[in-house]
Length: 106
Image (cartoon, rainbow, N blue to C red):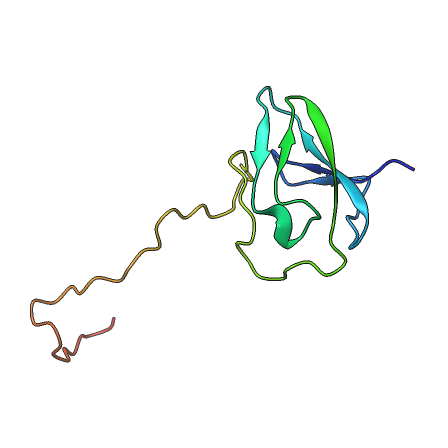
């Protein structure tokens, strides 16, 4: 049975699912090699280099880190996903900072 493959370009898993404690392949369908870093929170190695149009075998940890943002991938390009480089910050829109201003809501 073939190993599951995680497509680095679109996030799809072929021959899945990817299972805790089991091997899988990173799959790079692009023409450029990809360096994955900070993978040590959920894989047995911290980084992986996936060749252009190729695969690299990895193994999921038996107890991966469940926290979000525990992984970076410079090739990640999944449609519809937010890609935030700097969190936005609400700005004060009133000249009188600190004063409570009542506003009519339509």
